[in-house]
Length: 339
Ligand code: UFG
Image (cartoon, rainbow, N blue to C red; front, side, top):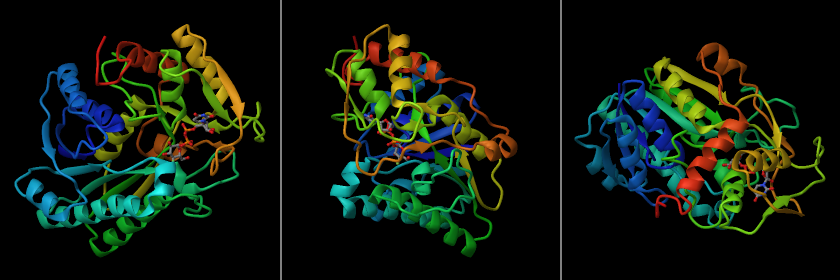
């Protein structure tokens, strides 16, 4: 297939581009480079020995998206483009809704105009809210108790895609609900390069290990979890990327939903220990108050994806820490500077 990968220069996008190319697909990346770097795609090209067509456009700008995609040739779309910082979404709700919803609406219109009817959409476990269940399956209610516009924008995008599919029955869609993507390509050549202070745990820990930040703040140790810190289902970004390829290759008319997670939970302190072992560095930390909106536990039941996509995670948290460390230690300033 020739796949249009929106947001393809970002963290998940670059690993998905690489995995699609290695599976024999062609890749066209559409990205506005507002929170990503061209260098990530140059490295994907080096690693795979294949070329990536790059289209620079903001999908939320209808005229620009129309012009950019008018002559583009693709059979399927993997739609990752969007804003993703939870805290920022609370401060800038209109920007988050405008970007994350309008880009999907524009994309669906353009797909219909061009007769492209295959779509894999990047959703999030955040749509489950605070599920209060040890392992979350896809039939868990969506949209209850969401605490931020980012999460709402994912839930609303899911609904938009469902409604558009009902009016366009040939449309083949999969909604992938990611748990917590971590790690990097094992070469250490591509990885997560957050702008500013990382919001997420693993990139923050990696920056502490490399000496870019003094210590980690652990958000709360009073949760009802084995060590009191928050438990998440960390999924290696290469496993996540393979989940996209599996979903793309098994599309059929309708809307299917799959959790992409490992099914295993790890606490904040488990991650600190694993990263410290992988890097051989101390990770100083202090316990502070919980972060608003965080849940105690979020762990996938990945049985449906295992069964129907023939996909499962094959990489451990230790593998993810090793690969994230390879990336961080070889690229202490991300794609900006190499040492
Ligand atoms: N944490 C810390 N210190 C930090 C950062 C995080 O203790 O500096 C803790 C959090 O409290 C949480 C765990 O580490 O217990 C993981 O936090 P992340 O920010 O890495 O991930 P979240 O689970 O909060 O968020 C992720 C995605 C979101 C998505 C959400 C859905 O980043 O996009 O999962 O559950 F909305």
